[in-house]
Length: 409
Image (cartoon, rainbow, N blue to C red; front, side, top):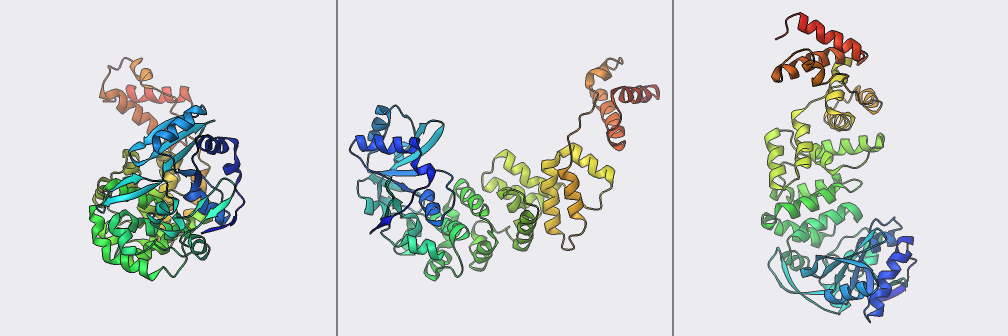
């Protein structure tokens, strides 16, 4: 059904957004806002990006935009998605679709101009809402009421929706974390519990994407606890046994006003064991940077009992960003939780240091290139760190000469 008109956010009325709608309208096609920008507008939240649906086939979307001198990128043309780039902003535009065949992982689709048919194939009622450029709201499945109530429901029969694409099971919990309030929809939860064994069919990349998005919720712990109780986690992340630790981390993140980092949160959630974390990173196809961040939590330990020299040494070696992550995780795992705050304050006040010597200084003393150069630099560097980085270049050179005169090998 169509309801009253909704006030649009400024990003929706931006001239660049208006230009895209105008270009499609010039080609005798219609377009609507869909997805997160609609949900967040209804909730009064600031929108982060804009997704648009259109009854225009992909080739016509490209033609209409090019006629308006708007750059297009066929980012997902086989699924009907075109990215429009205008004035430094990007907009995803997707043609209305209808499922022809599904196998639990991928759907074969055909393009359509039926707005209600496209809404009917979507996973959740809150994702079936669309909004016209004049603010007219289209809500065929009661998604607006569900959104207001914090009620996450599937469109139609939950089992049918999940069987069509098992990823929807994880999407249900992701949206529960971001938009839902207890208690969960029991029909949806029962379907998820029944079909959870099918999660093994999903690729690591798809699971990773949904998991990290779930962990970006303001407080994902209640949803993860729900997933554990419903025996969902054991089918794709059995290592997630430390929800209590994640809950403590969330408290400290809020307390010290730190930014959300899903990898940090995942590290708190998982059993702290290098092999286990490496297995998770490989199974979920993490990037090298994500894997290294996760493994750092298992291979490097910090303590509020570190001496001043030990703190300076690890800050110098790892940098304040990495040490801050380790301090937050250590604080979350330490039930006593004593003396971590001063350590964190010291980390936040840290300024990077640079050893005032280089390998060339060693070579200029007649040392041949090779391992000895690095060893000498490390000896002088350790002395410099122990002295709280006070020694200047001349003093470091003097120390280097002392080591050489003492017969360093």
